[in-house]
Amino acid sequence: MGLASAAGLLPVPAWLRLAVAAVFVAIIIAVTARYGAVIEEGLAWLDGKLGRRQTSTPRRVDLRKRLIKFGVACTALTTFSSFVVAVSIGPPTGLPGDRSEPGPIDPSQVRDPSGVEATLRVANVTMGDDEYHPSRLAKVDDILKVQLSVKNTNDNGHLLTGVRIALILPDESGKTQRLKATVSTGAAAVNLEPAAGVDLSAGRARLQYVLGSLKLRRNTARPGEAAAFVTASLSDTVLFRENYPLGDLHPGGDGAFSISFLMRSVATAMSIQAQVRELPNGSWSTKSESRPGASIQYRTIVVNKGNEALRETLIHVNLPPDLAYIPDSTRAVIDGRLRGVPDGIVDFASPTSADPGAGAQLGELAPGGSLTVYFDAKVAPSAAVNRTLIAVLVVRVAGSTEYYNTAHLTLRRPE
Image (cartoon, rainbow, N blue to C red; front, side, top):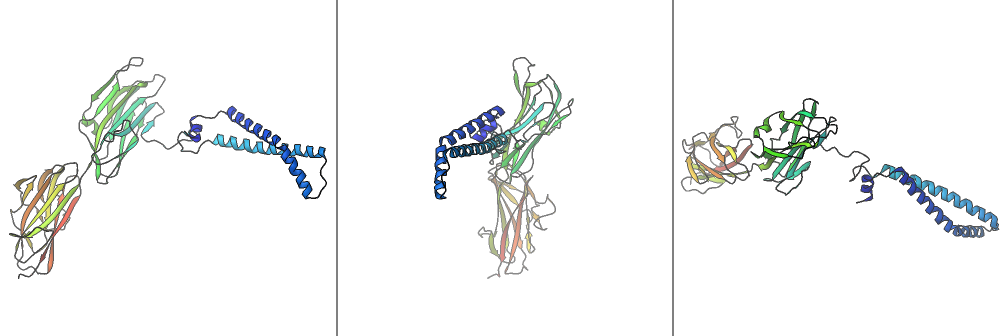
């Protein structure tokens, strides 16, 4: 531990400061007296250089004493003042162990003058945390454990009645996630709002509550009785209720209770390929060639590369002019199973259709799952050549933005 830390942890009494200053002064006096002869020789040397008659011995002795006293007084005063100021100020604010000035406010632990203390902290279970922290880092698929603890810190026997809580969890993706809670009591009109933070590794990630993980732990013993902690499961609906009642809190640590639950870092990640070929035997490619009047086929390959299911997966395509969709040609292969898809995949509007429901509904795609959608189209016989027709294929899932890719078909003159 450094000196600054020690000074912050152990306040220095005034008597100790004065004692140390006195020791410094004594050392300075002793050193000056010890080397007084050197001062005398220096005075004699200076007299010789100036060509003056040497000062008589009594006067030299008197001058030496005066110089010693003056030096001791100046040195002692300077040392004493510097030491007292340094010890009084203490270490710079913010160093570990500093107690002279308040450090940064910890929003994860708040206390009301009435004696209620609420703490909301988080641990990364996947990383092996064995204690809770005001904030933690988390990668995609990490499991986090969140704990809200409430304590009645009164030492006067005051009972806190009507304790209620509400948990506020983030529901949007983003690297910075904020978990909040509110703790209130009816009689004391207490309203505390502790908060904890989670920094996710990806901007597309978010926190997802693990169903069935909500637990309540509290001591059911009365003050003075042996501790009797009980842990019970709570309904998931507690997370969606405001002012959930938890009863009364006796004073002291025995009256504390805690609520804990798990959250998982999830991310929506998808790859989408759009390809086209000329029927019947053309090769699949994102850029292909055809001719006016030809029959062509499109396919879209979607792979769920995230760690959460893609719900309500919907796909539609925006075909340019001179391309006509062939009715009832849409079919899908989902996880290796072929099935027909009702028409509705084609949208002749802009790439961002105003109708969010436009397209073919394909249901849920599990993590690691894939689907491939096929449909046929025909090039208008009158289509101009030496230009490229671009089809925009769009995939949309519940709670996520749209994903796009394009397939390019260049028209050439028939040979």
